[in-house]
Amino acid sequence: MSFLYNISIAFYTLMIRIASLFNAKAKEWVQGRKAWRNELSAAFGKDDKIAWFHAASLGEFEQGRPLMEALRKDYPEYKILLTFFSPSGYLQKKDYEGADKVMYLPPDCARNARYFVGSLRPVIAVFIKYEFWYNYLSALKKQDIPVFFISATFRKEQVFFKWYGSWFRKHLHDIVHFFVQDEPSAGMLGSIGISGVTISGDTRFDRVADILNSKSENQDIENFCRGHKVLLAGSTWPPDEELLATVRERFPSLKMIIAPHEVKEERIMQLIASLKADTARYTKDPAEEWPEKQLLIIDTIGVLSSVYRYADIAYIGGAFGTGLHNIQEPAINGMPVIFGPRYHKFKEAADLIRLGGAFSISNENELQECIEKLLNNHDAYSSACNISKRYMLENTGATEKIMKGLEPYLMK
Image (cartoon, rainbow, N blue to C red; front, side, top):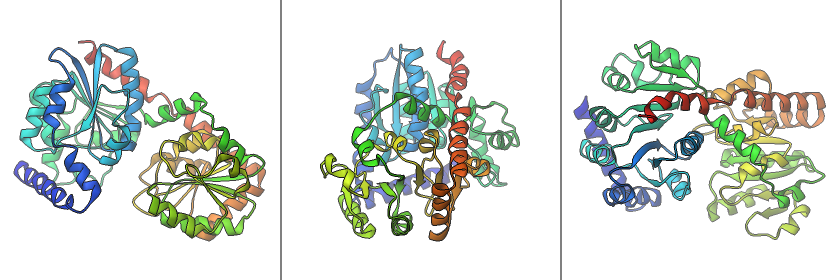
Protein backbone atom coordinates (compact mmCIF):
# COMPACT_ATOMS: atom_id res chain seq x y z
CA MET A 1 0.00 0.00 0.00
CA SER A 2 2.90 2.36 0.73
CA PHE A 3 4.12 1.88 -2.85
CA LEU A 4 0.68 2.68 -4.27
CA TYR A 5 0.36 5.73 -2.04
CA ASN A 6 3.70 7.11 -3.18
CA ILE A 7 2.82 6.47 -6.80
CA SER A 8 -0.44 8.36 -6.35
CA ILE A 9 1.38 11.33 -4.79
CA ALA A 10 3.88 11.38 -7.66
CA PHE A 11 1.08 11.20 -10.21
CA TYR A 12 -0.88 13.98 -8.47
CA THR A 13 2.20 16.21 -8.40
CA LEU A 14 2.85 15.54 -12.08
CA MET A 15 -0.74 16.46 -12.97
CA ILE A 16 -0.44 19.71 -11.01
CA ARG A 17 2.75 20.57 -12.90
CA ILE A 18 1.06 19.95 -16.22
CA ALA A 19 -1.96 22.00 -15.15
CA SER A 20 0.34 24.84 -14.10
CA LEU A 21 1.09 25.50 -17.77
CA PHE A 22 -2.41 26.93 -18.24
CA ASN A 23 -3.95 27.32 -14.76
CA ALA A 24 -2.96 30.19 -12.45
CA LYS A 25 -3.79 28.38 -9.20
CA ALA A 26 -1.82 25.31 -10.21
CA LYS A 27 1.09 27.52 -11.26
CA GLU A 28 1.12 29.15 -7.83
CA TRP A 29 1.02 25.69 -6.22
CA VAL A 30 4.17 24.71 -8.13
CA GLN A 31 6.07 28.01 -8.01
CA GLY A 32 5.42 28.49 -4.30
CA ARG A 33 7.17 25.23 -3.46
CA LYS A 34 10.26 25.60 -5.62
CA ALA A 35 12.65 26.95 -2.97
CA TRP A 36 11.16 25.29 0.09
CA ARG A 37 14.47 23.84 1.33
CA ASN A 38 16.10 27.26 1.32
CA GLU A 39 13.05 28.82 2.98
CA LEU A 40 13.08 26.25 5.74
CA SER A 41 16.80 26.46 6.48
CA ALA A 42 16.72 30.26 6.59
CA ALA A 43 13.70 30.50 8.88
CA PHE A 44 14.98 28.85 12.05
CA GLY A 45 18.17 28.27 14.00
CA LYS A 46 19.35 24.89 15.23
CA ASP A 47 18.51 25.70 18.85
CA ASP A 48 15.02 27.07 18.22
CA LYS A 49 12.06 25.40 19.90
CA ILE A 50 9.51 25.02 17.11
CA ALA A 51 5.81 24.20 17.04
CA TRP A 52 4.67 23.19 13.56
CA PHE A 53 1.05 23.79 12.54
CA HIS A 54 -0.34 22.55 9.25
CA ALA A 55 -3.59 23.71 7.62
CA ALA A 56 -5.06 22.61 4.33
CA SER A 57 -6.49 26.01 3.51
CA LEU A 58 -8.08 29.13 4.97
CA GLY A 59 -10.88 27.41 6.87
CA GLU A 60 -8.48 25.11 8.70
CA PHE A 61 -6.22 28.08 9.42
CA GLU A 62 -9.10 29.81 11.20
CA GLN A 63 -9.53 26.70 13.32
CA GLY A 64 -5.85 26.62 14.21
CA ARG A 65 -5.47 30.35 14.76
CA PRO A 66 -6.81 30.49 18.35
CA LEU A 67 -4.40 27.73 19.36
CA MET A 68 -1.41 29.39 17.70
CA GLU A 69 -2.21 32.65 19.41
CA ALA A 70 -2.67 30.95 22.78
CA LEU A 71 0.66 29.16 22.36
CA ARG A 72 2.36 32.42 21.41
CA LYS A 73 1.00 34.05 24.56
CA ASP A 74 1.68 31.21 27.02
CA TYR A 75 4.95 29.92 25.54
CA PRO A 76 6.73 32.91 23.98
CA GLU A 77 9.98 30.94 23.78
CA TYR A 78 8.51 28.87 20.96
CA LYS A 79 8.72 29.75 17.30
CA ILE A 80 5.80 28.80 15.10
CA LEU A 81 5.89 27.37 11.58
CA LEU A 82 2.61 27.45 9.68
CA THR A 83 2.32 25.43 6.47
CA PHE A 84 -0.48 25.35 3.90
CA PHE A 85 -1.40 22.90 1.19
CA SER A 86 -3.66 25.21 -0.82
CA PRO A 87 -2.75 28.52 -2.47
CA SER A 88 -6.10 29.95 -1.39
CA GLY A 89 -4.97 29.67 2.22
CA TYR A 90 -1.32 30.59 1.76
CA LEU A 91 -1.89 33.67 -0.38
CA GLN A 92 -4.31 35.18 2.11
CA LYS A 93 -2.25 34.40 5.22
CA LYS A 94 1.38 34.43 4.06
CA ASP A 95 1.96 37.56 6.13
CA TYR A 96 0.21 36.26 9.24
CA GLU A 97 2.04 37.77 12.19
CA GLY A 98 1.11 34.98 14.57
CA ALA A 99 3.67 32.67 12.92
CA ASP A 100 7.41 33.12 12.55
CA LYS A 101 7.32 31.49 9.14
CA VAL A 102 4.48 30.73 6.71
CA MET A 103 5.17 28.48 3.74
CA TYR A 104 3.74 25.74 1.54
CA LEU A 105 4.01 22.12 2.61
CA PRO A 106 6.15 20.26 0.04
CA PRO A 107 4.54 17.27 -1.73
CA ASP A 108 4.28 14.23 0.53
CA CYS A 109 6.96 12.00 -0.91
CA ALA A 110 9.26 10.10 1.46
CA ARG A 111 12.36 12.11 0.55
CA ASN A 112 10.66 15.46 1.12
CA ALA A 113 9.20 14.32 4.42
CA ARG A 114 12.53 13.03 5.75
CA TYR A 115 14.33 16.25 4.85
CA PHE A 116 11.56 18.53 6.11
CA VAL A 117 11.15 16.84 9.49
CA GLY A 118 14.88 16.20 9.95
CA SER A 119 15.75 19.82 9.22
CA LEU A 120 12.91 21.36 11.22
CA ARG A 121 12.96 19.05 14.28
CA PRO A 122 9.81 20.54 15.83
CA VAL A 123 8.94 19.89 19.45
CA ILE A 124 5.33 19.18 18.43
CA ALA A 125 3.40 18.93 15.17
CA VAL A 126 -0.26 19.97 15.02
CA PHE A 127 -2.44 19.03 12.05
CA ILE A 128 -5.70 20.91 11.81
CA LYS A 129 -8.89 18.91 11.19
CA TYR A 130 -7.88 16.84 8.14
CA GLU A 131 -4.72 16.45 6.03
CA PHE A 132 -3.37 12.96 6.65
CA TRP A 133 -0.02 13.04 4.85
CA TYR A 134 1.37 9.61 5.56
CA ASN A 135 5.04 10.13 4.73
CA TYR A 136 5.14 13.16 7.01
CA LEU A 137 3.42 11.20 9.77
CA SER A 138 5.95 8.38 9.35
CA ALA A 139 8.90 10.77 9.45
CA LEU A 140 7.57 12.43 12.59
CA LYS A 141 7.05 9.03 14.21
CA LYS A 142 10.62 7.96 13.43
CA GLN A 143 11.96 11.15 15.01
CA ASP A 144 9.79 10.63 18.14
CA ILE A 145 8.02 13.94 17.55
CA PRO A 146 4.51 13.96 19.03
CA VAL A 147 1.72 14.62 16.54
CA PHE A 148 -1.72 16.01 17.42
CA PHE A 149 -4.88 16.54 15.41
CA ILE A 150 -7.19 19.34 16.52
CA SER A 151 -10.82 20.14 15.65
CA ALA A 152 -10.90 16.77 13.90
CA THR A 153 -14.05 15.02 12.71
CA PHE A 154 -14.49 11.43 11.60
CA ARG A 155 -17.30 9.70 9.73
CA LYS A 156 -17.95 6.07 8.90
CA GLU A 157 -17.56 6.81 5.17
CA GLN A 158 -13.84 7.52 5.60
CA VAL A 159 -11.27 4.98 4.49
CA PHE A 160 -10.02 4.37 8.04
CA PHE A 161 -13.24 2.53 8.88
CA LYS A 162 -13.48 0.37 5.75
CA TRP A 163 -12.44 -3.27 5.52
CA TYR A 164 -9.62 -2.28 3.16
CA GLY A 165 -8.36 0.58 5.34
CA SER A 166 -5.85 -1.25 7.56
CA TRP A 167 -2.82 0.59 6.15
CA PHE A 168 -4.46 3.95 6.77
CA ARG A 169 -5.61 2.92 10.26
CA LYS A 170 -2.08 1.97 11.18
CA HIS A 171 -0.95 5.56 10.77
CA LEU A 172 -3.76 6.85 12.96
CA HIS A 173 -2.33 4.77 15.81
CA ASP A 174 0.89 6.78 15.52
CA ILE A 175 -0.90 10.01 16.46
CA VAL A 176 -0.30 10.93 20.11
CA HIS A 177 -3.72 12.49 20.64
CA PHE A 178 -6.84 13.52 18.76
CA PHE A 179 -8.84 16.54 19.89
CA VAL A 180 -12.14 15.94 18.13
CA GLN A 181 -15.21 18.09 17.69
CA ASP A 182 -17.92 15.68 18.80
CA GLU A 183 -18.88 12.35 20.36
CA PRO A 184 -19.54 10.52 17.07
CA SER A 185 -15.94 11.25 15.99
CA ALA A 186 -14.60 9.91 19.29
CA GLY A 187 -16.78 6.85 18.86
CA MET A 188 -15.46 6.16 15.38
CA LEU A 189 -11.87 6.31 16.62
CA GLY A 190 -12.75 4.09 19.56
CA SER A 191 -14.19 1.51 17.16
CA ILE A 192 -10.71 0.96 15.71
CA GLY A 193 -8.94 0.85 19.06
CA ILE A 194 -7.77 4.45 19.40
CA SER A 195 -8.15 5.74 22.95
CA GLY A 196 -6.03 8.90 22.89
CA VAL A 197 -9.03 11.11 22.20
CA THR A 198 -10.51 14.21 23.83
CA ILE A 199 -13.84 15.72 22.85
CA SER A 200 -12.73 19.33 22.91
CA GLY A 201 -15.12 20.93 20.42
CA ASP A 202 -14.34 23.20 17.53
CA THR A 203 -11.77 25.98 17.98
CA ARG A 204 -13.62 28.11 15.41
CA PHE A 205 -16.12 28.97 18.14
CA ASP A 206 -13.29 30.59 20.08
CA ARG A 207 -12.09 32.42 17.00
CA VAL A 208 -15.44 33.99 16.16
CA ALA A 209 -15.97 34.89 19.82
CA ASP A 210 -12.66 36.78 19.68
CA ILE A 211 -13.83 38.60 16.55
CA LEU A 212 -17.07 39.57 18.27
CA ASN A 213 -15.25 40.83 21.35
CA SER A 214 -12.85 42.91 19.25
CA LYS A 215 -15.79 45.24 18.51
CA SER A 216 -14.37 46.23 15.12
CA GLU A 217 -16.60 48.97 13.73
CA ASN A 218 -17.33 49.98 10.16
CA GLN A 219 -19.08 53.33 10.09
CA ASP A 220 -19.64 53.25 6.34
CA ILE A 221 -21.48 49.92 6.55
CA GLU A 222 -23.52 51.23 9.46
CA ASN A 223 -24.56 54.26 7.41
CA PHE A 224 -25.62 52.01 4.52
CA CYS A 225 -27.78 49.86 6.80
CA ARG A 226 -29.30 52.53 9.03
CA GLY A 227 -33.10 52.58 9.01
CA HIS A 228 -33.51 49.43 6.90
CA LYS A 229 -33.80 45.70 7.33
CA VAL A 230 -30.68 44.12 5.84
CA LEU A 231 -29.92 40.68 4.43
CA LEU A 232 -26.20 39.91 4.34
CA ALA A 233 -25.17 37.12 1.98
CA GLY A 234 -21.65 35.82 2.61
CA SER A 235 -19.39 33.54 0.57
CA THR A 236 -21.89 33.21 -2.26
CA TRP A 237 -21.61 31.33 -5.54
CA PRO A 238 -23.74 31.76 -8.72
CA PRO A 239 -26.42 29.24 -7.61
CA ASP A 240 -26.87 31.22 -4.39
CA GLU A 241 -27.01 34.51 -6.26
CA GLU A 242 -29.72 33.27 -8.60
CA LEU A 243 -31.95 32.82 -5.56
CA LEU A 244 -30.91 36.14 -4.05
CA ALA A 245 -31.99 37.92 -7.24
CA THR A 246 -35.54 36.73 -6.59
CA VAL A 247 -35.36 38.05 -3.02
CA ARG A 248 -34.56 41.51 -4.31
CA GLU A 249 -37.67 41.40 -6.51
CA ARG A 250 -39.95 40.03 -3.74
CA PHE A 251 -38.73 42.39 -0.98
CA PRO A 252 -37.84 45.70 -2.68
CA SER A 253 -37.44 47.57 0.64
CA LEU A 254 -34.95 45.02 2.00
CA LYS A 255 -31.37 46.15 1.60
CA MET A 256 -28.77 43.55 0.71
CA ILE A 257 -25.04 43.17 1.19
CA ILE A 258 -23.39 40.43 -0.85
CA ALA A 259 -19.85 39.20 -0.29
CA PRO A 260 -19.13 36.63 -3.03
CA HIS A 261 -16.67 33.83 -2.37
CA GLU A 262 -14.54 34.97 -5.32
CA VAL A 263 -13.76 38.65 -5.87
CA LYS A 264 -12.12 38.66 -9.29
CA GLU A 265 -13.26 41.58 -11.42
CA GLU A 266 -14.95 39.39 -14.02
CA ARG A 267 -16.89 37.62 -11.28
CA ILE A 268 -18.01 40.90 -9.68
CA MET A 269 -19.23 42.30 -12.99
CA GLN A 270 -21.24 39.14 -13.66
CA LEU A 271 -22.81 39.43 -10.22
CA ILE A 272 -23.81 43.06 -10.73
CA ALA A 273 -25.37 42.24 -14.10
CA SER A 274 -27.35 39.31 -12.71
CA LEU A 275 -28.88 41.21 -9.79
CA LYS A 276 -30.05 44.25 -11.75
CA ALA A 277 -30.15 46.47 -8.67
CA ASP A 278 -28.98 49.96 -7.79
CA THR A 279 -25.56 48.81 -6.64
CA ALA A 280 -22.51 50.16 -4.84
CA ARG A 281 -19.12 48.46 -4.69
CA TYR A 282 -17.13 48.51 -1.46
CA THR A 283 -13.80 49.32 -3.10
CA LYS A 284 -14.96 51.40 -6.06
CA ASP A 285 -17.76 53.76 -5.02
CA PRO A 286 -17.60 56.64 -2.50
CA ALA A 287 -19.00 55.58 0.86
CA GLU A 288 -21.14 58.70 1.11
CA GLU A 289 -23.14 57.41 -1.88
CA TRP A 290 -23.85 53.97 -0.40
CA PRO A 291 -26.94 54.88 1.69
CA GLU A 292 -28.86 55.74 -1.50
CA LYS A 293 -28.21 52.27 -2.96
CA GLN A 294 -30.20 49.09 -2.47
CA LEU A 295 -27.31 46.66 -2.82
CA LEU A 296 -23.71 46.79 -1.60
CA ILE A 297 -21.15 44.32 -2.92
CA ILE A 298 -18.14 43.52 -0.76
CA ASP A 299 -15.57 43.07 -3.52
CA THR A 300 -12.53 42.49 -1.31
CA ILE A 301 -11.26 39.96 1.23
CA GLY A 302 -11.06 40.43 5.00
CA VAL A 303 -14.08 42.67 5.61
CA LEU A 304 -16.96 40.25 5.98
CA SER A 305 -16.45 39.21 9.61
CA SER A 306 -16.81 42.81 10.80
CA VAL A 307 -19.97 43.45 8.76
CA TYR A 308 -22.36 40.83 10.12
CA ARG A 309 -23.19 42.88 13.19
CA TYR A 310 -25.00 45.47 11.06
CA ALA A 311 -27.34 43.00 9.33
CA ASP A 312 -30.60 41.38 10.43
CA ILE A 313 -30.54 38.10 8.52
CA ALA A 314 -27.61 36.14 7.11
CA TYR A 315 -27.52 33.91 4.05
CA ILE A 316 -24.37 31.78 3.72
CA GLY A 317 -23.37 30.32 0.39
CA GLY A 318 -21.79 27.09 -0.77
CA ALA A 319 -24.51 24.64 0.23
CA PHE A 320 -25.76 24.29 -3.34
CA GLY A 321 -22.29 23.17 -4.38
CA THR A 322 -19.37 21.48 -2.65
CA GLY A 323 -20.40 22.45 0.86
CA LEU A 324 -21.51 25.14 3.24
CA HIS A 325 -19.18 27.99 4.17
CA ASN A 326 -18.70 29.46 7.64
CA ILE A 327 -21.98 30.10 9.47
CA GLN A 328 -20.39 30.76 12.85
CA GLU A 329 -19.58 34.42 12.29
CA PRO A 330 -23.18 35.46 11.62
CA ALA A 331 -24.52 33.13 14.31
CA ILE A 332 -22.40 34.60 17.08
CA ASN A 333 -23.65 38.04 16.10
CA GLY A 334 -27.10 36.80 17.07
CA MET A 335 -29.00 36.48 13.81
CA PRO A 336 -30.90 33.79 11.89
CA VAL A 337 -28.79 32.00 9.30
CA ILE A 338 -30.14 30.61 6.01
CA PHE A 339 -28.32 28.25 3.64
CA GLY A 340 -28.83 25.61 0.99
CA PRO A 341 -29.35 21.84 1.30
CA ARG A 342 -25.77 20.52 1.52
CA TYR A 343 -24.94 21.16 5.14
CA HIS A 344 -24.94 17.71 6.76
CA LYS A 345 -21.16 17.50 7.22
CA PHE A 346 -21.26 20.63 9.39
CA LYS A 347 -22.28 19.90 12.96
CA GLU A 348 -23.04 23.50 13.85
CA ALA A 349 -25.43 23.80 10.90
CA ALA A 350 -27.33 20.65 11.82
CA ASP A 351 -27.43 21.71 15.47
CA LEU A 352 -28.76 25.18 14.71
CA ILE A 353 -31.43 23.83 12.38
CA ARG A 354 -32.56 21.42 15.09
CA LEU A 355 -32.63 24.20 17.69
CA GLY A 356 -34.32 26.77 15.45
CA GLY A 357 -31.53 29.26 14.85
CA ALA A 358 -30.80 28.29 11.24
CA PHE A 359 -32.85 27.30 8.19
CA SER A 360 -32.04 25.17 5.14
CA ILE A 361 -33.76 25.97 1.84
CA SER A 362 -33.78 24.19 -1.52
CA ASN A 363 -35.38 26.70 -3.89
CA GLU A 364 -36.46 30.30 -4.32
CA ASN A 365 -39.92 29.77 -2.84
CA GLU A 366 -38.53 28.31 0.36
CA LEU A 367 -36.01 31.15 0.63
CA GLN A 368 -38.67 33.81 0.17
CA GLU A 369 -41.01 32.15 2.66
CA CYS A 370 -38.22 31.92 5.23
CA ILE A 371 -37.28 35.58 4.85
CA GLU A 372 -40.92 36.67 4.99
CA LYS A 373 -41.44 34.79 8.25
CA LEU A 374 -38.34 36.29 9.82
CA LEU A 375 -39.25 39.81 8.72
CA ASN A 376 -42.88 39.68 9.76
CA ASN A 377 -42.96 37.38 12.80
CA HIS A 378 -41.19 39.17 15.63
CA ASP A 379 -41.33 36.22 18.03
CA ALA A 380 -39.88 33.79 15.47
CA TYR A 381 -37.13 36.24 14.58
CA SER A 382 -36.16 37.00 18.18
CA SER A 383 -36.14 33.32 19.07
CA ALA A 384 -33.80 32.48 16.15
CA CYS A 385 -31.46 35.34 17.10
CA ASN A 386 -31.24 34.25 20.72
CA ILE A 387 -30.74 30.59 19.84
CA SER A 388 -27.89 31.35 17.42
CA LYS A 389 -25.90 33.48 19.83
CA ARG A 390 -26.49 31.24 22.85
CA TYR A 391 -25.42 28.15 20.92
CA MET A 392 -22.19 29.79 19.82
CA LEU A 393 -21.25 31.07 23.26
CA GLU A 394 -22.04 27.74 24.93
CA ASN A 395 -19.61 25.97 22.60
CA THR A 396 -16.53 28.10 23.21
CA GLY A 397 -13.58 26.77 25.22
CA ALA A 398 -11.96 24.26 22.86
CA THR A 399 -8.67 26.17 22.75
CA GLU A 400 -8.24 26.01 26.52
CA LYS A 401 -8.91 22.27 26.57
CA ILE A 402 -6.37 21.63 23.83
CA MET A 403 -3.72 23.81 25.45
CA LYS A 404 -4.04 21.80 28.66
CA GLY A 405 -3.52 18.64 26.65
CA LEU A 406 -0.42 20.02 24.90
CA GLU A 407 1.12 21.45 28.07
CA PRO A 408 3.11 18.37 29.13
CA TYR A 409 4.78 18.20 25.72
CA LEU A 410 5.48 21.92 25.47
CA MET A 411 7.14 22.03 28.91
CA LYS A 412 9.72 19.35 28.12
